[in-house]
Image 1: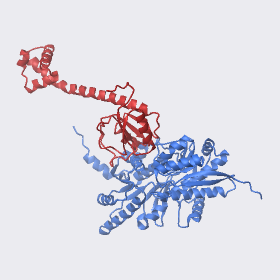
Image 2 (image 1 turned 180 degrees about the horizontal axis):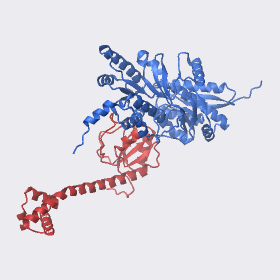
Image 3 (image 1 turned 120 degrees about the vertical axis):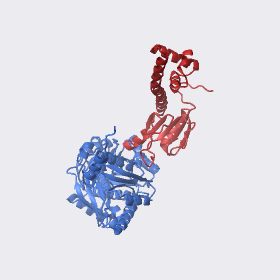
Image 4 (image 1 turned 60 degrees about the vertical axis):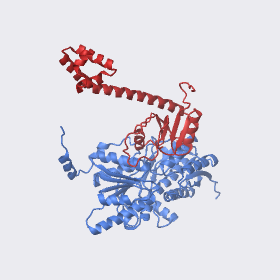
Length: 402
Length: 197
C-alpha cells in the first residue's frame, strides 16, 4: 500500500527538565510525549508532530531566549510549555508580539487571559476554591498557612483567607519561606506547639517533601508520649502521585489534595491513559495532573489542527473552541470567553502505595473563572460547618461598649 | 541654572527598583533619553534621599507578613506591574503609586507615566496640605469659641466686638487668632490686657 507522506508539524516545547522544578518538567514532557506518540501512530491525523524540546532549566532569561529561538529560527506556531507564572510572563510578550499560541498545562492563580494562550491547567475556581469549600464544610475554619514566598502562595492564601473569613473563621498564621530555602524546622516546631487543626501547604519541591516528613516524625513522637493527640489535616492544591513517592512511606499518607486529575480516576479513558503511560515510562510510574494536562495540550492542539486543516493560529484557536475531548479526567473543552478549559475538580486523600483515594468529584465539568468574577462568598459561607464552641466563646466575649 | 520647559523632566533623579533584565533596561534607556539621571537597584533601596521619582517592581517579594503598614514614600512613584492578582495589587497599592506601567515595559508610555505621576503627586500633596490646615483649624475652632465666650463675659461685649479684640491682639503679636485663643484660655493672656491692647 502506497502511503501518502504525512506533513510534519514542528511543535515548540519549553519545559524545564532540569533545575529546581525539573521533576514536574519531566512529568509534563512525558504527558506530551504520549500525545505526540498517539498522534503520530494514528491514521486519523494527516500530519506528524516533530517536537523541538528546549530546557530552560528554570532560568527566566532562558525562557525568553529559547522562546525567541523557537519562534524566529525554528518558525514554530505552537509552543507547549511553562510551569511557573514568572516563566509564562517572560514568554507572553514574545508569543503575543509574533501572534503564536502557547499551550499552557500548569494550574495557576488566575487573573490573566491572553488571546495567545490556551490555558489547559486549572483556574482558581477549579483548585483553591473547591478545596476551601471542602475545608469549611467538613474540617473547620481555623487554618495555618505555610508556603514558599512567591506569587502562587500569596494569591492562594488570599483566596483562602477571604473564604475562611466569610465563614467566620481565621488564618491562624501565615509562614513563608524563601523559594530557594528548605529550612522548615521552625515551622514544624510551631505547628507542634500551636496544634492548628488544619494546615494549608503551598511549599514547593524538596521543602515541601521535607515538611511532610519532618512534621510526620515530630507528630509521631508527640503521640508516643500522649496518645490520642489529633493530627492536623494537611491540605494542598498541588500534591501529586510522583511527589508522594518522594515523601515516602507513612509520611505520605492522609493528606488532602484538590486537583482536576488523579491517576485513580476509574473510567475507561483514564485506565487506558494510565496503562499507556506505564508502558512508556515504567510500570511503577503513575501520571500526575501535570502529565495529564500536557497530554491534553498535545491532543487538543492536534485535533484543532485537523479540524482547521492548517496550523494557522487564528484557525486553530477557533477550531479548539469547537472541540470536546473525552479526556482521562472527563469531558474537557476550551471556553471561548477566556481561553481557559472546562475541567472537573476533585478532592482526594493520599493513601499508602503512593496514590489517592478520591473523596469528591464535581458533578459536571466546571466553567473556568480566571478572575473569580463569580465567586459568591455568601453562598460558600452558608455551607460552613458551624462550630458551637466558637459561637459560645464569641457570645461570652462580645460586649456593647458605650 | 538651566531652565527646562514645563514638560521636560530633564535633571530629575529617578530610582528604579527592579531586578535586571529587559524591562529595566528599556525603562532606564528611555528615562535617560528623556534627560533624567537614573539609579538602579535590584530590589528595594535602603534610602530614597535625593530621589525625585521612584519606579518600583510590583511583582517583587513582599514583606513576609503581607499586612505591612502603609508607608508614605514621600515622592512620586510609578508601579511596574506584571501580575494582576489581587494579592499583588494590594501590596502595590500600599505603596501609593501615582501612576503605573504594565510589563513588558515599552518605550511608549514612560513619558506619560512621568507626567501623570508628577502631576498626581503634586495634586495629592497640595490636597494633603489643605486638609492638614483645615483639620488644624477645625481643632482650634473649639478654642476660638471658648476664648470668645470668655472675652464676651469678662469684657461685657458682643460677639463681633470680642472677635475684633481677639484679631487685634493676634495681629499685634503676629500670631494666629487660634494661638492667642489658646493663650487666653491658659491664662497666659488676661482679658484686661486685651482691653488695653
